[in-house]
Length: 460
Image (cartoon, rainbow, N blue to C red; front, top):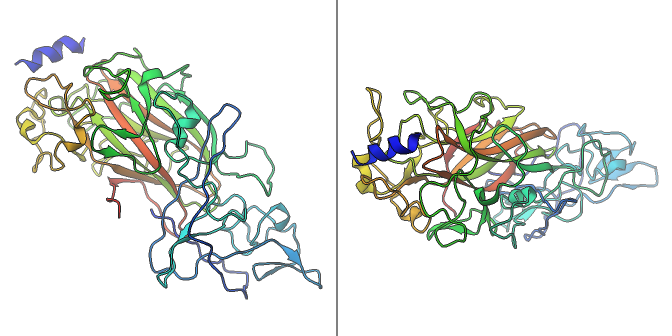
């Protein structure tokens, strides 16, 4: 058991407007919509909800999307949509998978159809940003989050966990024909599972819907964020909190193929425990080129257990895997280190704990403490439990990353599964937790999105 060995050791994107596609002529100048989007959510039969993301476009764009309006026939019988002449309402002139008869309100632009996502446009003339109506509902910005108000801390409905990350749309089920009224992108299915996808009756305290975390960590967007933990997803002030660095939940987990991921010079144990995952099957908007989400990882492994076989991991496992993923995982640093205490972005901790860094590591490959050490300080640990439940006599506090953003490419209209997974490695001690928030679809035509994990820019 690691418990006794450890105790002994202790005391020794932006979304931007798309350009009008080539191949169709337009004689109509776009006119902007108002700046305030409507928001809302949809619930499936099981009470779960899902979403699109949102974001702002880069400055300097001109015009943007205008009101494409409904298709109508002129006296010659030619159907006109936003100044584009289409002679057959059943044809898919822009090859986006939708005809005018199926609700495409601009059959000259493949980025506009009922399966697309509205985007926030920043006019080049300095005017107020406004939402487009890419999805042809006549309601610019509809279905874009946030949509996570009123979800209680103890909620374990998977769709509500998705809502806490800004999934505010439910996709039409597989096999449903195109319709002009129903959204077709978003969450197809949602479930809490074990790490390898096995059914999980209830994750109970391993899941928390958090309006904040401790004293100084706020949500990235909306009213709440999702917390997953290999212990209890609670702060000391919340009912059900662990009260220590270790709470045992699920023994003998099965890791996904290729995990725990090996870290150069610090190979982990191959056994996992206390694993929990939120698994979402998604359909991307037809105009999407990628997606992103924010996360923040905490662990009692830091700093003493750095570069040890017991280092816990958080992974974002995608199937089918996009180009650049490692065994399907899209969350790692520039050295391909998975999210654990060995991640290059671990910078939230107590500067006075530098002497205990990698204290449990043995051998010639043990890393030296980063310099500067703990540049973000310890304020983001206060009130979280990671400030008071670290029992290592050499360390005053545990550690965490700052907010990080992971992005990955996607093909418009693609269906894929993403699982947000956390687990204890090697034993069930020294728990780790992750906050996940602000999922966004990236809809930037022509832009190549590549997998990356980088520090989240501060709010502007």
